[in-house]
Amino acid sequence: MNIRPAEPADIPDLARIHVRASQRAQESNPAGPEAINEFGIAEEWSRALDDPDCRILVFTMGYSVLGFAAYGPPRNHTPSDVDSELWALYVEPDRWRAGIGRALWVVAANAMTENGGKSAGAWVVLDNIRARSFSEAIGFTLVPGALREMNQSGEEISEIFYRFELVAEHAAAY
Image (cartoon, rainbow, N blue to C red; front, side, top):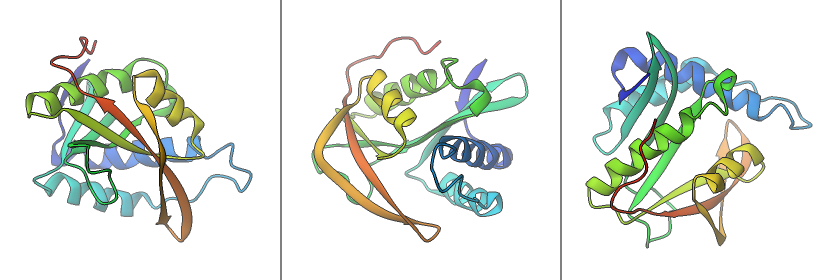
């Protein structure tokens, strides 16, 4: 297993994992899983990889990408007292609860700290109980009243904000 910066050749894997994890997370939604355009998601991750502010890490085992994390400076609607943001963290659903997300977070948090970060934030979909539980399990705390409404694929999504205090060094990732 290895965590490394993403490369252009990883974009199809980023899109596949993003789509599969999103659909699995929505399975408990009474409306059913949303149809997600993998091609459109690949284009988004291609743009993100070209963004000088965005850092993307991938977790690999052998030749397989099993998860990824994207982070960088705070984006729109992020509270002003946060200097870093976890933009995304997705793991192949068949590998959930295997430590991949935690390992990616630790490497990202250490990189944020090395770049002078003191606090990190993450927007999490309000109805995604699994993502909220994961965020809390790795040490994020909910910021009361921090809520934003997003329009994704024509659907209104509510997101809540979590905060994490960065320290000099986080535990070993794996």
